[in-house]
Amino acid sequence: MLTALDDAAVGRWCRAAVTALSGSRTRLDELNVFPVPDGDTGTNLLLTAEAALAALDAGAAGGESAWQLLARGAVLGARGNSGTILAQLLRGLSDQLADSPPADGPSFAAALQKAADTAYTAVADPEEGTFLTVARAGGEAAVAAAAGDRTALADVVGAAADGARAALEATPGQLAVLRDAGVVDAGGAGLCLVLDALVTTVTGVEPARPPLVRRPARPHESAADVPHQPPAGPGSEVQYLLAGSDDAAVTRLHDRLAALGDSLVVVGVDTPTGREWNVHVHTSDVGAAIEAGIDAGRPYRISVTPLAPVRPPAPVAGERAVVAIVPGDGLVQLFAGEGARVLSRGPEGVTEDAVLAELIGSGAADVVVLPNDPELTGVAARAAERAREEGREVAVVPTRSPVQGLAALAVADPSRRFHDDVIAMAEAAAATRWAEVAVAEQEALTSAGRCRPGDVLGSAEGDVVLIGSDPAAVCCDLLDRMLSAGGELVTLVVGPDAPLGDAVCRHLSAVHPTVEVARYDGGPGGVPLQVGVE
Image (cartoon, rainbow, N blue to C red; front, side, top):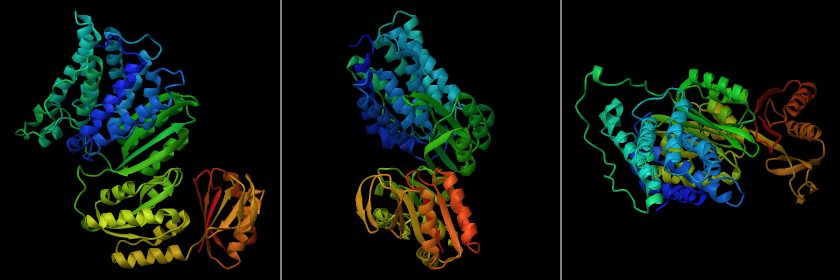
């Protein structure tokens, strides 16, 4: 029986919470009907807890408080609406307990109530009958226990878990969407599992709880009996991490996003390189939500997920979707603006399961996949084969570069027959000669000779054709070579060095004045310039 929560106990609690959420993930996903029925609450809570645990394990020897590591990992790894609110709750606990002695019953009770209060402030339009309600009830029950004669840590955490569970059972009476579906709130149910894991950690005994089962919906109440219900959420979930900002800029960002959508949650946390924020919103204007982040600082790890039904829907005849895999976060807005479902590829690549989830989640009967990288064509093809087994018609257009993907998207026409549209997109991609400029990371022998770290490499169709030291000179020389074979339209995707893009555009205007130029900023950091010639 623990009398206080030290760093070791915090780590055991986090590990127990991951185990509990992992075992109940599917059931929590099935319960998920609010704020939108996208069936991912259990998954998002688990991923958030796993990120917290990974941060604890990675920083165990660094001397930081376990509370700080837990909070930072949760905030930076938070997924979805419920995951982001869970991260805020953990950060609130850290704010109260990180620089204090191991938490006994009264100190933990006060910290939990304060954390629940701050969680409400992180949500732009808090609703009762949700995760927030359950968290507040847990905090109030803990404080009530600590204020009486039940001040031991075991009594306090037990009271918190019991109070949260009681509030969870009452959530269908607060939200009509829960009542009509015959379920309790999925996020609140996940929090109850986390608090039960704490009880198990402190006492060594797992609380006996009834299973989370779907209950028969109760008869409809009159409108006067039902609390305020929010409107249906808009079309996409946008989430990103924000660095290089400050509190004033984040406040302005919060106001802009609140006007663009709902389910807005913004949570900040201190990191070794400065404060960062996790930003989550449901909106129908994806581009504006990302642009607001760019104005506020440096958004990264951007994800855009169309809000889907609870279960993957049966494919809708006549519905068509395009799934584009793009490198890094900079091109997400560009491809999303062209109407594609975007899957951002990080340094570790992208998994077959992630591609499959996008294909099935689209709900479309006909789906085109643009891998935009020759190394991802096989991954896309395997995911497509699995999606066909689920009743989808999937075609992979083997785009080798994002500029080829943009060319394919430009000619997509859902009014055509699906196979005719695939042929047109494939022909447009194939007709786009592509090239890119990169910086060598190590010494190597290329088709243009030996390169050394720091050399600027110009490649066409995947083969290095130029090695130089000046990025602008290599870019211009590469374009001249590409256009020597003809071309009417040049597409430029410029990396973080905007002046380089300006120099290239001036060169094209002076040397190739008849060529039309389409420039897009936001290319990946390791590739200063990507070129497509049609």
